[in-house]
Amino acid sequence: MTTSPKPLTLHEDRLFPSDPSQRAIARRLYAQVAALPIVSPHGHTDPAWFATDAPFANATELLLVPDHYVFRMLYSQGVPLDALGIPRRDGSRAPVDPREAWRVFARHFHLFRGTPSMLWLNHVFHDVFGLRVRLDERSADLYYDAITEALQTPAFRPRALFERFGIEVIATTEGPLDPLAHHQAIRDSGWNGRVVTAYRPDEVVDPEHEAFRDALQRFGEITGEDVHGWDGYLRAHRNRRAFFKQMGATSTDHGHETALTADLSDAEARRLFEKILRGDFSAREAALFRGQVLTEMAAMSLDDGLVMQLHPGCHRNHNPWLFRRYGRNVGADLPLVTEYVHALKPLLDRFGNEPGFRFILFTLDESTYSRELGPMAGHYPCLFLGPAWWFHDAPEGMWRFREQTLSTAGFYNTVGFNDDTRAFLSIPARHDVARRIDCAVLAKLVAEHRLDEDEAAEVAVDLAYRLPKNAYKL
Image (cartoon, rainbow, N blue to C red):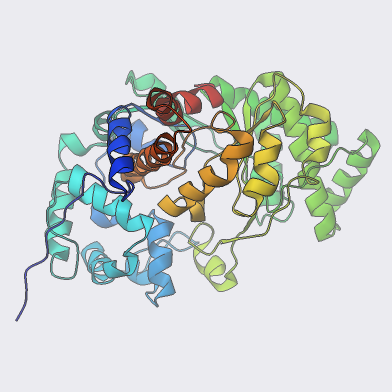
């Protein structure tokens, strides 16, 4: 006998403390931040969505295909990416009906129990699409039809959702070769939604990147600089940074395997660059080059005012078969042990005391919170801590971040929350989770008489709204 799907509900006290007195405080604090505008200062949504305002195609293309948080879990349980319609590296796809791909997802949705992905998705299903039964194999078609039909209506166009979600500003992330045509189209359209870019130069900074040589050639063509000389290479970066800033960028972003920085002499930097160009460098020299360029980027940030972000500590493309078949960003990246105190010293020796420099650090190595990152941010005027990121962007990770950095960095050497997502509809869900967790942390401090409630309320608003705006110069 087939049973009906069970109801889908979102409890109003989700993520609040189980202790009744703390829960009551958290409710009051949350009431003051729940409806604040969303500031999304770093992420990977597609600016084409907002430039064209075209309808999203269907439930699968919107909620499943772009979200590596989702399909990595399915892959781990033996679901082939072809069965989900994930594009291959060459741009092709297996001939899969998107409805059938959604059925596969629904059949495996139980795998996400207890994960942040289920929190975010259920929020989207319930609050964005008004669904009131749980997703499973029985309700798969109901979900697919309801979501896909809604997406064809004006209320579910990208710009309408942007406004409905209360997004004040969102930053996308583009590479150095991107012409930013979609950002220009957004400007030319007259729409009031604020979508800015961020400069992510990894493909012309990492000699071990598979596209480095071709990207470097194109980098020179775009900028008109001789990028095969050290001076021209640095001028090309300044050229592109100025263009990105003109198009609204307030930040740069750097995704390196380690936090290593270097401060070589001019002669040493030139010799190293020549080796990189010849292609006869070692892995150590490639890392040294990346570290030198980070310090050069810091110097440029001091000149042009762009906030510098560093996202280190990820072994990308750990699964070589998956990388060869599907390319980057398909869930095969893994956290690494990361050291910061010695790694960042060359950069901080030059710029750590500069009042005009702003440097936001992230980590995938939680052991560094109390040992390195908290004390560093609690000392250097330029340093701020980005929130729990990627594998730790979860209620437990957010708690650990606050508990391990509060004593040395406080709240005000952090930058609030950023969602860092490709999944557009998850943005309000992710910000809601962060606001609830921060209110729960603050409620505990109030209950322990470490903060008065009026102070906690002010901190809650700062974390949800003021700090990200100030940190990213938005």
